[in-house]
Structures are given as C-alpha cells and as structure tokens.
Length: 188
Image 1 (tube, rainbow, N blue to C red):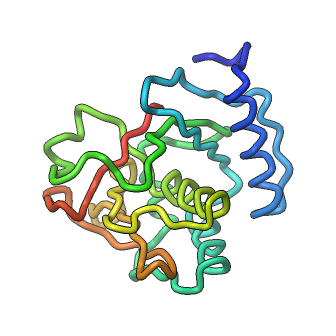
Image 2: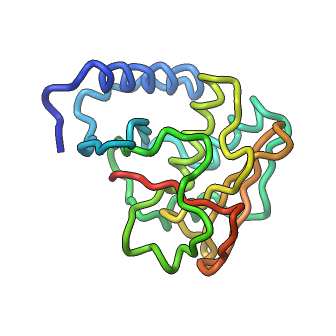
Image 3: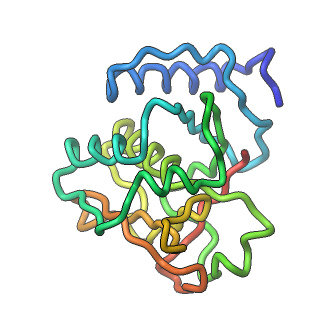
C-alpha cells in the first residue's frame, strides 16, 4: 500500500473527498494517514470511506438531493455491520469510473471468489459524489449489486436509479442473474 508519495491526480481526488465530506456531512477530515491500495488500469475512481458516516446517513443525503429516492424495508445498518470491510479507520478503494457496472449476467455466487466488489456504503458514496460532480445519476439502465455487503437475511443489496428522479435500494439473492444486474469491482 502506498502512503508516502502521492501523484497529483490522487492528491486532487483526496482533496475532493475532503471537500465532499465538509459540504455534504459537515465534518472536517484529515486524510494524511489514509490507507489507499495501489490502483490498476481501469480502476481510476477513488472512493474514500469514513467510519463516522453510515449507509443510512448517506441515503438521507440522497433523499435530500433527490426526492424520488426510497428504499425497501431493509436495515441499512445491518449492511454496514455485515460488510466485507470492517471499518475502524478511514480507507480508500479504487473502482471502475463508469456509470453502469461492467460485469453483467453473472450470479454473485459464481464470481464471488474471483473479485472484490463494492459495499453498499461505497456504492452510495460513489452515487452521491457522481451526482454532485455531474448532476447525473449512475445506474440509469441497471441495478448495481453491492456484493461487498449482505443484509441479515442473506440477501445482497442493490442500488438503482428510478426514473432519473432518485435512487432505490433493494436486495437480491446471490443466485440472481440478469442483464439488468451488474457487479462493480473494487480494489481494496
């Protein structure tokens, strides 16, 4: 993991996240000691995650900015607690900087050992930041499977856009396979 010399793009992305957390959540962060994995080709969007903010907090900001946002009767806290990444400190992950997830028509069960995937919290942060930057939604044609998280009932959270008016959180089982469902990979 690189923590010493940062390239200019990485410095800009970290600064952008610092401003994002101040603006959206009113918290000041110092990311000078953040753990960020080495990036690989195609993974050029940094997502910075902090323990002070939960998936529920992020979703409330979605509702504030995008009134059409809603969720099924799911515990967002459980998705944080049963994530692949236990969070004590700030951390960064790299994702593919694309609006729609690339891996489609595959079950989570069939590919779960080959890749790392975004958590619900990371996908919500990406969606909110992308909307802030471009005024557009991610996942306008598909559901993003957040296979790095799981709800208490064993189902996997998904995030999708609803009529370009907001986001919806639903869930699927790990055997669901369809062109409308895609996995967003992450470098952790």
